[in-house]
Image (cartoon, rainbow, N blue to C red; front, side):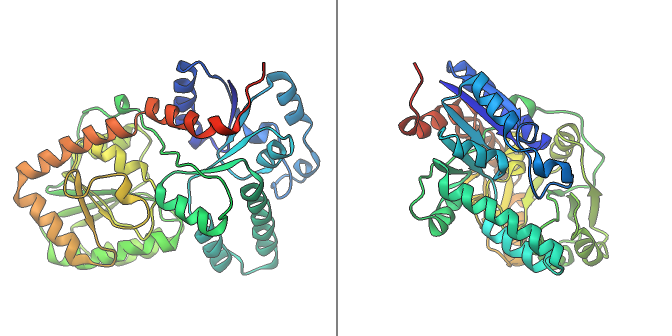
Length: 355
């Protein structure tokens, strides 16, 4: 089998390259490409891109002769792939429909932005409707897809992680007990849940909370929480070295969020043998085991966070066991070999191998 994997940003290249390497071990011939190198169009920032067309895409297909195409975003490349009649599988990492709603609400105030959002939505919905299958990254998101496209084929693509990259290393100088969170602040529906930490900070003055991340809503959070001496904002951490060092240094990882689907940091923290707590929203419960690798907490409930953290800090042997079970769980369920094998099972019914 020959597969083209098209990534949309360099940030996604890192993980898709590991996926491609595992597919090749299963005798799949893979070509990993940057989608915009082969297909561009409106609404690119460069006006000249609007008139590029599909010449480079056609050349790619003619030379490689793929049996299937796997795209990681809804783009002109995905449209060309669908039009080529080659089985096209679309990776869906986010709750697109909520993101579109918040985009219109927060950025759709002027005509230019509304036109751009409308056009991107038109491309996205066409890709979703006409792709061979949509592959969301968790079961929760698969249910969301079925609500919007009930007749579309789906299959869950649990993203893998290379456990060898998450090893014990030097520690940062932090105050302890230390609770850490890594999360950007670009979507208010997700970020606003951090505000409930104000109550936690008041009632747990001896516990230090560290937040790493940034984004357009960062100041709305730090203005409220930096009043407390036991809260510190660290800015963005360099990936993966500074993230690894940070996770090595904290005592508990806390994912406090209004929405998340398959958070990579939750997997990374468990690989670093840290007990975790996570808001019970979206796909968080699929990335951990409640009461075995950590604890789920109710959305909007600071008392639940306080109770779970207190239990972990007062029962250190429990925290150690949660961490060990978390590492074991992630290594077994989210290794790239398992992901690659599952992916081939999903696409096999739709792909006809060229002789």
